[in-house]
Length: 352
Image 1 (cartoon, rainbow, N blue to C red):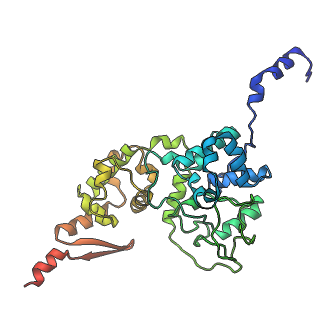
Image 2: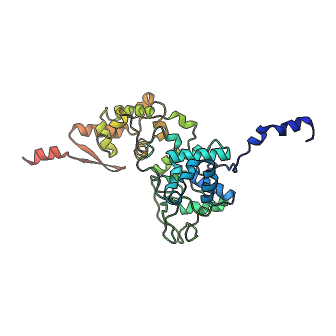
Image 3: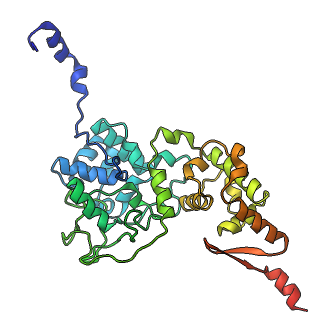
């Protein structure tokens, strides 16, 4: 290639050639080849490691220098307590995903947060994000062996995700060596090691506890595996249409009976159907697991054409039949139905 000819000289004089370079390395987020999708917090820490910087210095000097809003946010409280919100769907998630996208020139950074669900889930909904980092110790060791480093999947930041779906053991919340909770953004850009005692975040002894039911965890993994483009199909209106069709088909339109079947207050769905309120993540996931239908399907499209094929329809009909006889259904567990007489019926008959 002759770099001295006029065509090449004009090419390098073009400002667009230099503007395409990113200020930070355009690291590819982990989330393919069978690995769970990475969260934004984990991505930022790996980005700091790639640049041989402390994550806190990256946030304070680089991110803060590019955005005055971030400069006002980053402090010790953010590093230790509030930093987990970058994985959520609130203002911090949007603020940090935007600046990371700007500095890395990647258009898939928002996929590392819950922003794709922001039109459906409340920003400050109950039971969404954990108060401090949680992790599967066996996954950290497996990542280190196969990838050469550890990372934190996005689902680990969700409160409902309590069990590893791969190893079927509970997630840890404190260091197994010094019993301290971990900061969201440690001083060193290394994941998988305690920020205080520097030991690996893995117990010295083998974990024997085995949990078989990981249906909630599997559903959460499915929710977070969706890209921003596919999440354009979900909406609060689709959720209301599908919920109304499910209640009409399975519970003969009895909203209170559906709520009791789910273990909720009798009026729980009224705000969703009539007032446009957003469902919390725990309730959405519980409904998805109960119907053996993904939360994505429940919030996209319409179920009118397939309303007769709801998986849990037979349970709803049993509950409806019992309700007409004066019985109230009380959930004890997923495999056993429990029935009790309503207090009004007992008071009436015991007085005799």
